[in-house]
Image (cartoon, rainbow, N blue to C red; front, side, top):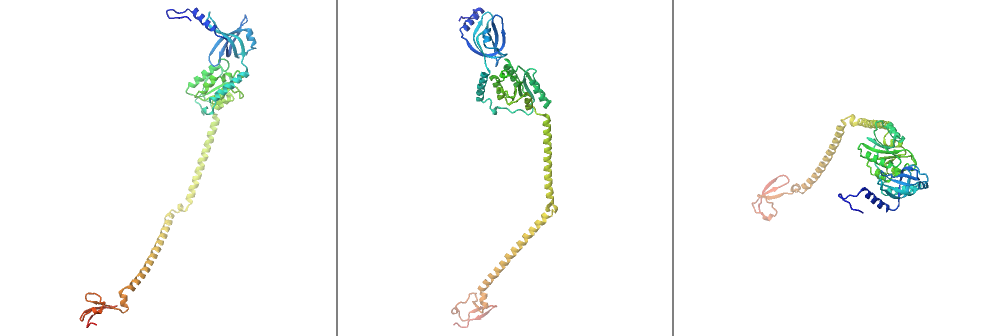
Length: 401
């Protein structure tokens, strides 16, 4: 390696030769891609471009026609695996691959790879139902990614406008098969994702062979769709076709027409449903009114509403009955009390001194009112008061006993 500086730069010749020496030391490698161009020239040589379908990148490949013939007839956009050695041409400063062997990737191998990728993405949860975003009832604007002037585009647009005439579209016409499909579809998807009014994105194309639909199973495109915040409807191929984009999309439509029906409501059906709901609401309101009217009629038939005085008279009867019960109870208690008082009076009367007097006894008292209980205590000449049953009289002690 040589040293360079701004004062001592290396000439182009030395740089290209150094690059050639470095690349020539590299051994042959296996590389996979899609043939985007193929030219067979005189002199027994063939030239092609090998393209990476997930990015806009390609490399030049050359080989002998015998190497190309050994790979059997290659269809347009064939996916191949090439065993080649890098070569650097110093004259024009270009890198190319010199192919020693070309193998076309068979459908069986592609299917195996797709199954492996499918299992990998499923393990990451990219196909889980909880990742799906619900489609809006009526989107402000529909993003549409489709081929250029294709029947799929017409089916989506015409059927959508037939169902809802004022629907708006933001259309991106791109390559939907071949080497540029993944790059152009991905770029269109990014653009529509950035537009605020686009509330749903339809990705569609018509039917095709397994190889034609391979771009819609590309890992980079599938991951991009999985990370979009705008709901995506996939309408790729026919119902039997199932690219990986169908599994990560929020809704998988069997056809472009089905996508239009799923994204846009039918205005005729919506109007009919509105009328039906209005009729149901009217019936409901009428039933409620009829029921309440019936309740009012039943209330009016009640005696209390026929004769409002019933409220007073009924309460008056209750009050009168309570008063009568109170009077009877109170009278009964007075009667019992009177009987009890009479009995007490009789017992008191039987025990009173008057009762003793009534039986013929008398009470002898001195003038000071003290009762004479012992005749020996009297002296001749003492004045006495004698009380009998009716009244009292006086007496004088003549001589003691």
